[in-house]
Length: 566
Image (cartoon, rainbow, N blue to C red; front, side):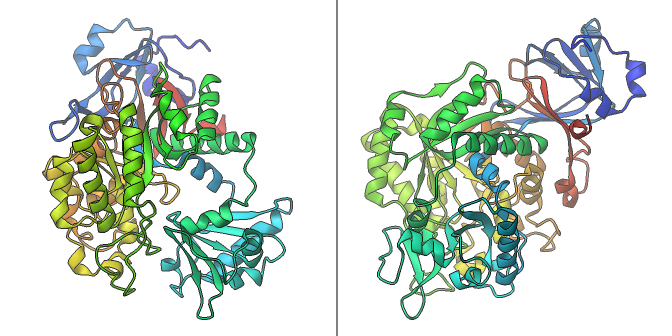
C-alpha cells in the first residue's frame, strides 16, 4: 500500500485504531485529527505550559503545526489525514537515566526480581542453568534481599547446593552488589586472604571467609574474569532493549555510563538505520579510552538519533546494599558510613579532564555525604576551571542533607531523579536513615519549588522501564498496589503536569535537546505516542495502568500494539 494516501474521515471513523496504525508509517505531510493531545510548551522548567490540541500536522518527520479545527480547514488538502477517534496523544517519553545494554542483557539472563526468598532465587538459577547447558557462566540480576522472607544477604553456599560445576554471578537489583557461587569466587581468586579494594567490600563471615556477596568496586574482581560478550551478542542485547523501550512509549534514553565498545555498537546500529529511538550517551568515567573520546569532541548525528556529549561518574554506591555514602552512620548498621566509589581527589581529576572539552558532567550520588562531596567539588571546579553553563547533573540526588538542597539551584545543577526509586525504597529507607534524615530524601517538589530542573527516568533495569510506573509514582508517591494510603511523604509528590514535564521537555533540557525534543511544537521532531487512556483524566491511582498503543519517532511508527499480530 502506498505510504501517501488520503483517508476518508467517514471511513476511518468505522475502522479500529490498530488497523489504522498498522498500515501507516507517516513520514511526510500527515495531518492527525480528532486527537486528545497534550504537550508542554517551551521553555523548559517551571515556565513550561501544558497545552491541549486536537490536530497535529507533520512534515518530513517534524511538527509543522498543532491546533484544532482551524488547522483541519487550512490543511484539508493534505495527502494523509488520519482520524485518531479521540485517542490521547502525548509527546514521546524520555527516560533520563537508564542502562540500555544492561536492560538488553537482563532480557537474556535469569531474572530474580520477583523471587521471594534465597531458596526461591537459587531454584530459579538452577532452572535457568538446566535450560542453558552451553553457557560457561550463569548470569542474572535483580535480587533484593529486602523482598525476601529472610531479609538477609545471600551466600555462595545457597547457590552451591544447586549449581556448583559452573560459575554463577548475580547482580543485585541496584547493580551495586553481586552474589557469586564458590566456583565464581575460585575463578576470581577470592579467598579469606583477599583484601577488599578501595570503594568496595568483600563481605566475609565471622571466620573471615568470603560469603559470596561483593559490594561496589569489589564486584570487578569477578566481573573481570567473565568472558566478554561478542559484538553480535551486544547488538542482539541492544535490539532487544530497543524493542522493549519503544513498546513502553520511550522515544529517547539517556544511557548512563557507556563504554568505547558500546559507542562503536551504537554508531554501527545508527549507520545501518537500526535505531528506532534516540540515545543520549554518557561516557563511563572508568572507560580507559575516555581521554581519546573526549579529545574527539561531542558527537551528534544529523537526525539527533545519537548524541554523546557527557560523562557519567560514580560517587558512591546504593542505599539498599548500604553502599550509599552517608554523613552519619546507617541507622541499622552502626559504624557503617557507606562507600565512596570514587575518591574526592579522583573526582576532581576527572572534572579537570572532562570540563575543558565541553562535556557535561553527570555524577551518581545517592547518600547525603556523596551529594555533599559532589556539590563541593562542582563548586570548586567552577571557581578554578569553569563549566557552570554545561548543565551538569547529579544522577539520583536521592538523599540530600537539607542544608545542601539550595546548592543545586545555586550551582545550576540538574537533579536527575527516578520516581520509582522512592516507591521501591519506602520499605527500607527509614530503616537505613532514620526518620530525621528523610527531610532531604526523594525531595522532588522541594527541588521544583526552588527552580531546579528535575529530569525523570527509571534507572532500568534496576527498576522496570515502563515510564507510566514513574509518572504514577511521581504523582501519588505510592506503589502499584497504591500503598501507603495517602502516599509516602506525599508533600514531595509532583502534579501531573510536573511529572509529564520531567519525563519530556525537562528531560530534553537535561541533554541540551529542548530545542529539538521533549514537546510537540513546530520545528521539533515528531516523537509522540498514542495511549489507551487519558492520564490527566483517570484517577491518579490508575496512571500506571496506561497502555501504549503506538510509538512514533520523527513521524515514523516504530511500534504498534498490533505489530505482533502482523
